[in-house]
Amino acid sequence: MFELSLYSVVLLAHIAAGIVLVSSAVFAPLTRGAILRATTRDQLRDWIGFLERSVRANPPAAMVLLASGLYMGSTGWWSQPWFFVALGAWVANFVLATFVVKPAVAAVARAAASGEGPVNAGVDRLRRSRRWEAGEGLMRGNDFAMLYVMFVKPSGLESGLVIAAAAAVCVGLEWALTRLAGRAQLPGLTAATTEAS
Image 1 (cartoon, one colour):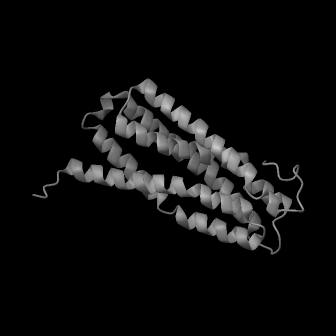
Image 2: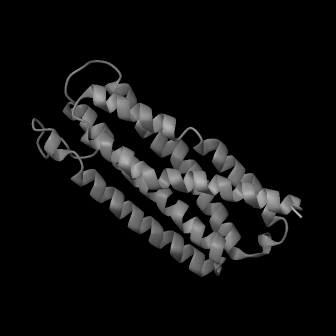
Image 3: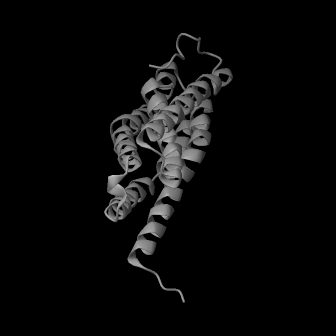
């Protein structure tokens, strides 16, 4: 009774790390929506701070996901194409998080760091960055697609199609969120000045 193999422990760690990352993907649009709707620099700083605190567990969870996935892959999954599609999605998310989303968030944080009063056109352009929009949408698509790929373990072609479809849907939703959220809260800005950079 209660006999746990090393594989079972690693699988449990893999699932727990996946829960952390997918939970973040589910709730991130709510925080991003609040960032886009913030009307003052003070509100914007609060929401950026909340976003930064809420994703602190993501880097270690991503490392646990990778390490546990590689271990389980060594037990036989390395011969299956879906495993390499999932690994590719993990690498893509690492690159997007490190070189696209994090710098975009940091740019908004720097722009809003000093001063009081309403959000101006320059800060508004930064928070509507197309890089942030696309990067976050692609990451979210990869997170959800990896769930399907890991549970269903489909062919390499099906895995690739699921990744592409999830990316297209999530980037489209991110595009809609960016354009719908917050425009009414910034009466001094014209459509031209609120276009994402």
